[in-house]
Length: 262
Image (cartoon, rainbow, N blue to C red; front, side, top):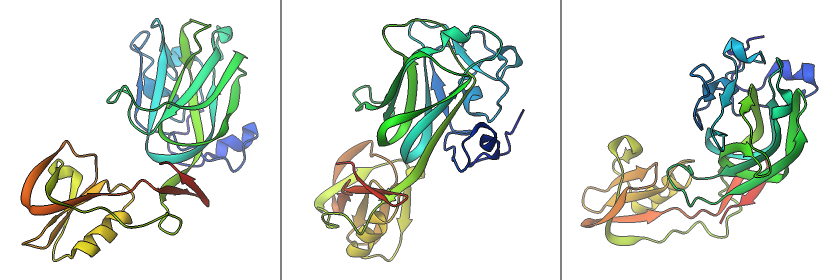
């Protein structure tokens, strides 16, 4: 059964008792330990294809010493649970004793990124098991790996994640004020910044604060030009013509829930 055309809420989940459940992982970027045979890409686990026969190239499989799989949700979400579909053509006993963890930063780029536990599952998994997080978590990257007590080939035929998109909550922060640093400049790639002309410093600050992915901003004192930094800067350099500021982390607002991530 191939439902690749569905992008958010999967109607098919009504058939397995999850009516109203919304999948935020479908077709998102994925990463993993080594592919078992070149026919089991990590992307197969979020392609919307519920065919659980591994030979049909619909599953991810890795035989690495410590196999793992991870999805980038491409934004912070309030995550409530993960549904995992195992293979249906044998070796079902292999999928057991799993840990599900999450990160707000890419652990491949930042190995010291904080680990946010979702849950652990001891014992074997059912054909399609939903594993609720012990409590809702806010994160961008979700990773699945075996617990240390178990080493085996890892096969995931589909991974579905329930959650709500997050943005800054401008009404529930302790303060919306930002610290301005004079004579400095945030360096980001040209593709990762947005220019706002004929701006004021206060307008630039307000614009960045309400932009979901704005890390901070540069403000040119002479031209009154605002540069919104949409990713973490590669460096901060001296420049007498600029001031910069980094947005406070404060709260994220996730479908009615205000979450302090400081």
